[in-house]
Length: 425
Ligand code: HAM
Image 1 (cartoon, rainbow, N blue to C red):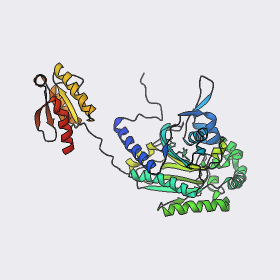
Image 2 (image 1 turned 135 degrees about the horizontal axis):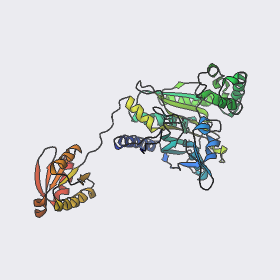
Image 3 (image 1 turned 45 degrees about the horizontal axis):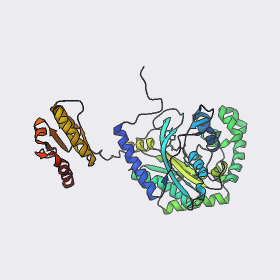
Image 4 (image 1 turned 135 degrees about the vertical axis):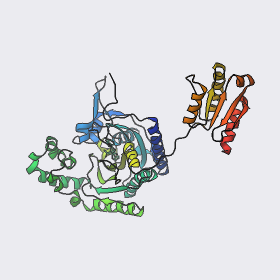
């Protein structure tokens, strides 16, 4: 039997992890500059947490969760997203009591959704996300959006489109909901069975149904923008003002509703406009979630955040032809001939590594020529050659691979010699 990675998952091999590490480094640096601190939450949570936050009628909860019963008969779910866990932790750890509000957190880790696999869509993917919880200031909305844009810019992306919308507050949402029910009710037979149940519970979800997306009644549905009250309009205007001041270009799209239930006021997505990018162009999505902390038992603490998958970020970098830093090569490769030389070589190797030099040697008893080939392939800066003669004299042959010069040098001095050469080189 040949085993394969489960559908929708992938192995990330060393040539790729090197790229991941560079992107992760950018993320850490940008978060540091904006004073967002890392939080790590478990990969699974109580199922009900996602039902209550992401929403019972969403595709994520209805169709995409990896839910299982553990041996203690508890229903647990592999997290499909990070906001629910962060908000749970915010409440559980009483972060609302921290003197500096909002509490600014970021996370990066695997999320799981049972989705149809296609380019840029996986069943296990890594989301980097931030959450700023404890402020209702439109300036923080612009900060969060700015942080996401900075990550992309630092990663070398330029073909980006930021789309924003306001989903209003509870009052506007409820007026809009009534209008949607009136709009869809006479024609609900034309829709899928999920949409039929969504009609009364949460008609907004009909608008992002993957099955009925081409039904013209979706395009002609009443727009939330016509139901925004004065307060919501003022909030949205303030967010736009802050974005303009920060020089962040955006488009307003009244049809942007997002696929999770906890949003209100600001919603946004960042797309790649690069031609080489596949069908799925959304790189990042986020928005405000006032009321979510209360919804799961916490005090009033309005929040906003976003998440982006690293997979899509890397795909966008590839589509735009961004070049990655070259991976560092070996400082030293130790070539040994014979058993005694190998023991001496292992000792030198250990001293090199203790001094922070990247060093390796052969462990398959190959001939000298093959070992030298490895040194070339691994682009070692120096090669140390040890044979019986060198062991007897307590020396090594040190070759500089750039100049091809070599010299005999005492074993005790070789590490210092290489460190010195690296400093000068
Ligand atoms: P979301 O729109 O469901 O929002 O996902 C955010 C991002 O995660 C997407 O834009 C995409 O980059 C990535 N993503 C989602 N599903 C997949 C998939 N199957 N394969 C690859 N990448 C994927 C959220 O998850 C919210 N928690 C965002 C948020 C944080 N809102 C407020 N705070």
